[in-house]
Image 1 (tube, helix red, strand yellow):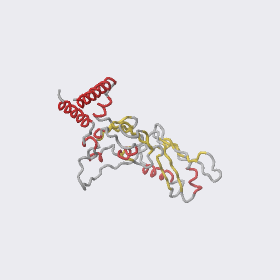
Image 2 (cartoon, rainbow, N blue to C red):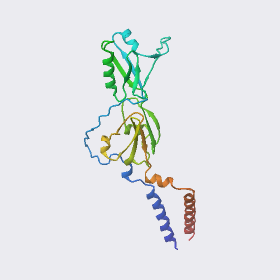
Image 3 (cartoon, one colour):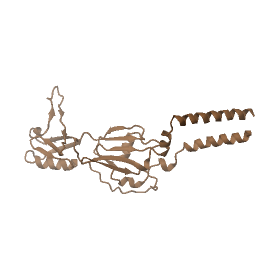
Image 4 (cartoon, rainbow, N blue to C red):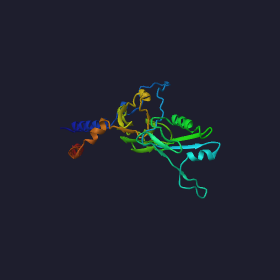
Length: 256
């Protein structure tokens, strides 16, 4: 085998390695079927619904602070100008909370606005024009798999999109499977598994585009990642052997 043949073999091997390391556009680009200046009408109308085991903060106020005081629970006395910490309400297995004076009320399945309306009706016989502030305090989402910072993240508002959740996790890695992202959701004690294709604009109308509390987002590895992870010690040895052969071949070529 002459010097020119050795050189061609070497270049072919290098080219194959470069090609195998490249990811195609269709594997890494979001919303590939959207056009320039295209307007999309979002059909989702995501509203947070309270669930079992949610921690809900409810504060009642009115023009008469003494009248509204019995409806707010605080942990410990206020001392030195520092106000005591307000107690959150845990939704039990029956979807109920135990509210002061009123007693047990069911709020699981209700939105914050629906809960506010319910409480306003129940409080009307005790307080005139009550102001009710409601907040879900344990809204978290978990992002796992092929993302840069997997973990569980708190949500400060009342809703979050899957794109925002991926943003919190540092976005998908280059080897994340964008067309088959899995969302695991707890619905009335049942796990619901839904997949969403983030390479298509229809993702905006997916039932899991807006996440709910305690949703888990899992980004699968694409084929490139699976092939890479399947390399065992024997493959590593083979790569080492091939590298040694190439190096030896180059040395022989340079000496010819």
